[in-house]
Length: 247
Length: 189
Image (spheres, rainbow over the protein chains, first blue to last red):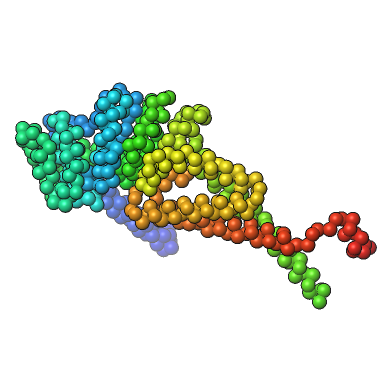
């Protein structure tokens, strides 16, 4: 026989079960909503990444290197075209290094884009350099950007200095390649095909991690030396390379 | 009066003893700092065995860090980069050995003052570079300035302590030989 006490205990149990069920139901609903949101977000991400992939697939990849891959020393430089130290490093050290050690097949230089958010036109300059690199005009573009850094960093008119350094035919090609790349285009956008390459370099830089520009890494005989930072004069860098080449 | 003076004298002796111990510990710590700094700069930078060539490579690598301070000419950079780590090694051993401690702590203080001033100058100029102090990628910034400032303050305290210990030793009367002591003081039992 059910006593009133026993009955109320049963009711309590049922109520607890309901409460439990309610919690489970609420949890289930929240999970479902989350799942739906994820599903809704994924196609967009896939679509946008596939658009970017398509864009990069159709365009020739930018080659931002100097010299032969088989050189005993590799110098990987993470730089921002608007950073004054990068400009100084290029003008005082890299240019001479390219003329001497790269030309002699001793050093292979790899440029990596690491535009800093503090620089207004750094990202746009990197887009121009990538576009030029895709048609094999990287060295001309880099020289033009660093030689006129103060000018375009003030006015934002990068095109003017690129046009002065390249032939009209090359400039026409680059202009076409720069479609969708505007100063106002957000960095990492999918409208500018070069942003994918810049972001790729940036991701590599974050792995180092690059804390300031220029940051450079030296590789010799498959060994990676600790990253260096700042402007290093040609004489000092040359002395280090000579020491490595002696080994 | 004697009853009061004796405990005070004993307390002063024990305080002096503690200061002496702290000064020695401080000096040994400074020695450790310099020895580690020298080791970090001279050790092979990549997986190669210790050799004259590997040390030379490491010093050339250190030269790049010295150069990034943009303070010296390339020739001076190379000289400093090749002399500073061996000097740090020598200073570390000197501090460790305890020979002429007043001089060694003064030299350490001067070196650390120079480093501290260099950090402040670099930060004030806005140079984003690696310190190169202990061979790792430590960027010059407020944290590094605080670290170098602490080393400077610590070194100053050790130097003052070393001079205090020297003065205290000089003030103390010449210690009597055990035989003479026993002749002066009557046996306690």
